[in-house]
Length: 203
Image (cartoon, rainbow, N blue to C red; front, side, top):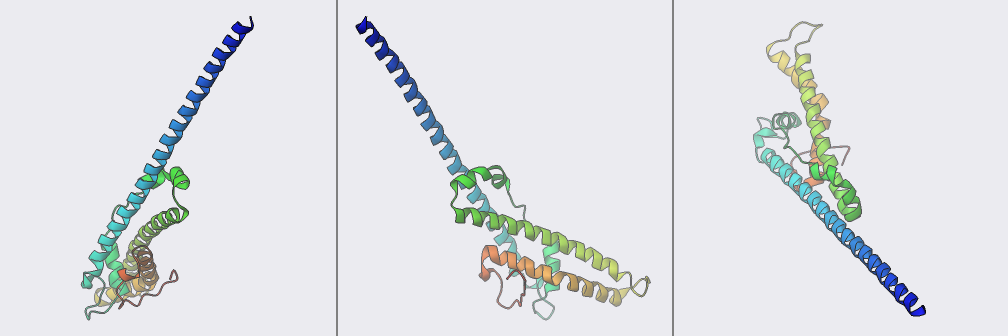
């Protein structure tokens, strides 16, 4: 009887041990797959951020290298000229797909400085797009104001042009400086020509 009981206990113990080992093995496999997925998610976020920066760099270099896009007829820096160029040259289509879909994994797997940098780039790009929209709206308002001079009488020719440019310059110079400041924050100070006298509250 004792031998049978001992044999049964041993067999049951073996079954329980085998079950526990199988569970532990499955848990480790799950953890390994989860960590691998987190590493992939983090890599995709960093890749997406790098691609966005490359797109911005290409866009910005096309403006800086074209002196006529940001200067007066005399060749001096003009925030009005640059503002109109920013309006005409639409920003690239930046991607936030992996950031939006893998953010949970990013919080787990990315170093704090990497996470902060990726978030900063995304926020700066979104702000740049908002500034571009604001400049476009300002241009529309300036054009409308140009046609409403002297108590509603239509201004034509040179006077309309002066009114339009004055209003646009007054409402857009700070926006342009902020746009440049965002670009500097992403691409570095060397991205902005030293001859540009840019002043911005954002540094």
